[in-house]
Length: 153
Image 1 (cartoon, rainbow, N blue to C red):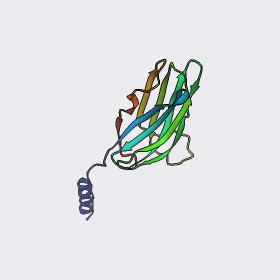
Image 2 (cartoon, rainbow, N blue to C red):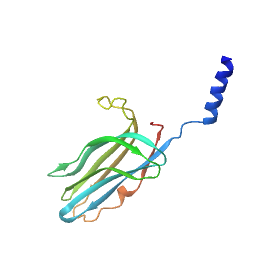
Image 3 (cartoon, rainbow, N blue to C red):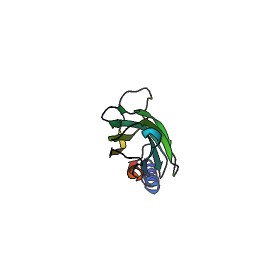
Image 4 (tube, rainbow, N blue to C red):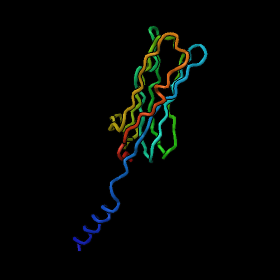
């Protein structure tokens, strides 16, 4: 009887197949407005559903006399083929300078008050130099970076 039950469970697992690996793509919309106001908007889109913890790191927007960033983190539910923007940051930055932003996706902690860093599922790096006199940003960050998360749920 136990052997039959075990065989049935194994058969059901084989039919169900492996868990679907979710692919997430990230890109940044970058704009330059009046008075050298640079704005960055992070976009994430998945081909399936995933619950993740996002962390924004890096130096942000940097030039010779200033540095600004808005490190941030939070939980996020990614829905299939639904772009989401969990982070936006902007500041006045006179070129030359550089942009340095890292967006990490991590497993959600079992305890939301835990300080223990959870496993890294994906990391997306956005870095470029801002040349003197730049008034229109290149489309560098608009190119999607994609990574497979596995099964973060």
